[in-house]
Image 1 (cartoon, rainbow, N blue to C red):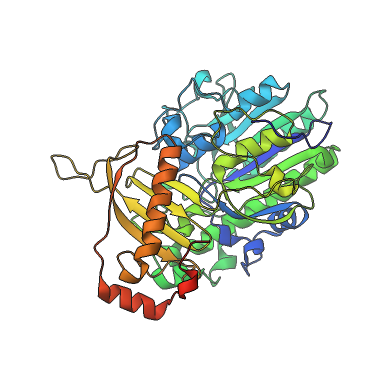
Image 2: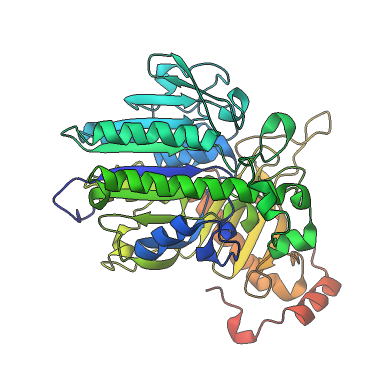
Length: 468
């Protein structure tokens, strides 16, 4: 795919990637907590991707999509621990070919090995390397272990966010003296929980600032682990935003800010054990909707972008903005024509693959959310977890206009039969487009009682039964 280059100069690119961050933790999305002044400024002065979603709400699969621009079922990373197909070119490969210096710092999660250095063949082609495959297993909040491109281990002092930020700033300073532009990917583990103790360890003194902080409506209604974990989670996000500010200041200090594209996004959200027994892997916006903003050449002054954008669109977007041809195998699309208002053509729904805790699929429009899950079981009666399934059963239907926090599941409601049928066909189409074999979707039994109750609570005027 070829797009028009927006500039004759080649910009640097910095990706600031957080882990498990909800969209509604940011002021740009209405949070009253003041956690993200730097992100909010980035969104205001650059382009705020208002409706940004992951294409896979699991760490490894989402990362494979961001590195390749392909769906997780096509990267081989449909679940954590599955190594990425080494034959696939990554975004780093494309930037390398264009003469950029590429570097990866932080959490990787795309190698079959969890502990120790990541083998070179699994590093995605990045030239400079300071990372750990599963940073949550090889480090703790105040003990950061990373391995460089020579497989040498480095132990950094301080809070983990700060240790990684310090290293990234040193890299920016070094590359600012070079002749060629740089592509730097900084991948934080925060605000992901610390696995071995199921805790959200904020820097010293930060958690206490949010012990009485208000929680989003879904967490107020469904609770989960949020009373225990929300204060620490907020503290981690506050420190991440301060790190973003420090990176921006470092770019300004070395004279590269005006010529650097900064992408801030996350791999998935966090529903705090309200939708299943852990934190993600569900179709709900708490799992799939992420904070995303882009600044720099081509994006400054872009304002609020309201189209439905997927994480899978980010590789094409960054290549396009750097003047590099987007390869045909990438399944995502550049949003730069939308930002520059040179095109209004865009999809009107969002496709999500769900795996590991379940084998599921979902589609989201501006108004509706529809999901299905596989109920296939093995001889032992346990669910068969696979990249795809031959058949799915309808699982969820939400009217996001009337019920934005997805508290009332309308699936099976007779009043929503037409809407459900339309969404079912949309989902099947998107699955086939992603390279999946068209499956059977078993309709949920229609329940007049549910339909009547749902219709009373969320009536749909006849003229609005068609999807937006």
